[in-house]
Image (cartoon, rainbow, N blue to C red; front, side, top):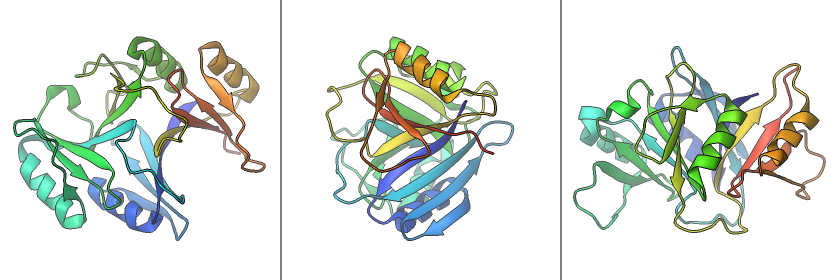
Length: 239
């Protein structure tokens, strides 16, 4: 089992997908009105597909799964490049934060980081930051799911692909408990050949995850939440 997708709910999947594709230098996989997919390949590290799906009545709030891009010593230039692609600046109420606070074309916040040794070698996507009611517990849960291992970072707990390349997954203490509304961004796992879907589901629930049964018809994947209520999907192994 491995981390395969970063999924975005979108009002206009092609608009949002093309922005993020240009932002991180990814490669188009699917370009359709209701679904856009692009692939980020980190040299020597993980491959992550960004998937944009059309959803009506989007929530406009701070996402529980935050994103940050690498800026380094050229943070200002990188922020300007993203603004030219369609981002906008956000007022975070502080003048001396060490990151540039932006929003993508559909208004969802993200950041551009300054130079930081904790994010060396990540590539363009530096950080996935997930809200957690218990970062220690949830780090163990996500490490078991993804195979990612403990890394240094600015959050209470951080994980990274075993190659030590690609983004850092940080578990951050949540400001408020997860409500009933679905997260606007979520992660998908993919089973590998030989993985038993029922055994994986049992492992998830044994670790305080929950399997959901949404009334979305006959799906080829299964939907879960982590112990803090964050949704994720487990996709079948590729044939």
